[in-house]
Length: 347
Image (cartoon, rainbow, N blue to C red; front, side, top):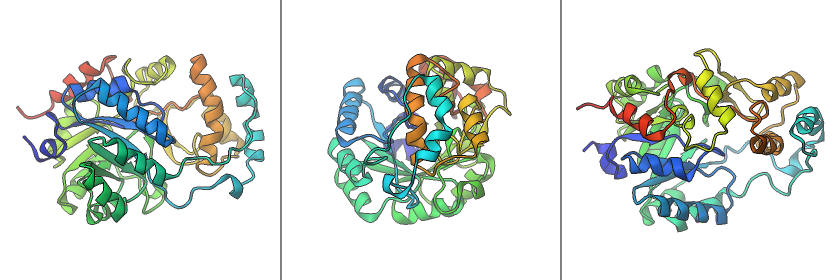
């Protein structure tokens, strides 16, 4: 058994990427039941919803599971900090297309992270992974007291070193090929676009904790390459996002299946933070307007029409997150993806 497998209590060093808004209990359980580490993204979840979600995960699988939280970077805006009306007006055609009224600002864009952490500790998942920052000493102490392993996420060597110094148990080194948000925290994401092939061996050389490679890994070849670079495991998102067990819409899964290597772009249009996805009407119109609110105001704003579009199955008005290896995402069932990835492990 490898060091990472022993640390996390898993049979194969394959981690499901946590999807903020696109996670499902079914997919998380399928990966954990298959011997990997299923992950569930808790972005925006209230404490009660966190409790209910972890309870559902515990009922769905006896195997280890991870949950993921976004840490505050310190640049987040609050409703009282910003006049959202100009940004709402700029998105008016998208609200109309989704069949919803333009929203009014909430009292808060996100629940307090401290409350989310308290809920996670009370629910006691096996693993807590974090993005966009470094967990503080109190968080790490509380996690250990509750028997929870902590995984940090880095987009640069400096971030990985800082995470290890803080005391995390493992580090995900995520290259710029990865789908979804670029989770940089020491420098701007646009200044931290290091590819997986370059990032992983440098992180491995710089830290002593297990390194999990992420970004552009979708089949057995990617797994073998990541291990050859010194990683002790891999984290895979897009290939699992395409499967029927994910919470992605059929239109989103179809878009991943059609995507070529150059069909993803980096954009701030959907959330106010840089993220990789497949362009659609919403992305094009928001970028063309030049009116993109800072995070998390923009994410709240687009979330109104995205929720309605998801219910209608409209792929032009949702976030089509996907990585540059989307074309290698060939399977519709999570078990088949896991079998393909496992085939890249040493015998």
